[in-house]
Image 1 (cartoon, rainbow, N blue to C red):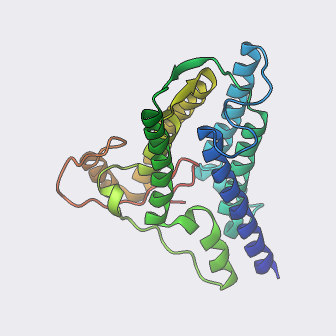
Image 2: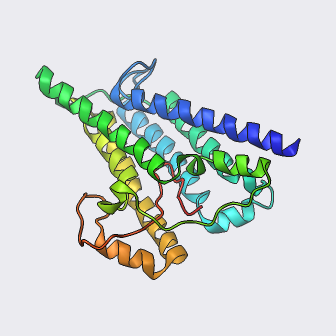
Length: 260
């Protein structure tokens, strides 16, 4: 019964995540959601900046702290290891939903593309970024990254598989294609407002902080294999530094690292 409850909890956490990421696409691109990055109640600019920074900081702190090895060692004294990842996913999703709900729009225009074809191209580029995010997770192990595999293995009394060191497709050209996808999705827009610019700038800065923390963990986990991979393959810009085939286990920008 405990394992069935863990499975239901993991599936529910994944469902909340899936709804959250779909809403995130609409929130950033202004599509088919009741409240996007440029809509909502307007407040004085200083209040908007402070509230928005607080919301993004809450996500960043939750996201980074819960991903650290020391926190996981403490946390799993109280939360079963089988649902640790699902709990992480759930908390990340809830912090994002709070951000979407409480985000304060800052609608002053930084740039606007009026040409319909060019505007459509920019929107398409943003959607391409989201496709890159999703396909990158499936190239490694989507359901492990988001906690489903762990609760299924727990139900059937299987031991978690050891981390594998590999780099399918995109990972031969860029070490962090998931992060690259988010950067493209956040910056490619036909209408850049001050609020959108704040969101894109802060999240991009956090992505590079996340890369630093992740790569430190990956070096600790995989040692010289990862150091050689890091020397051969670009971090964000997609080019190969060498023809030698690299291998790696990667991470995504929700902080759901593949080595977890």
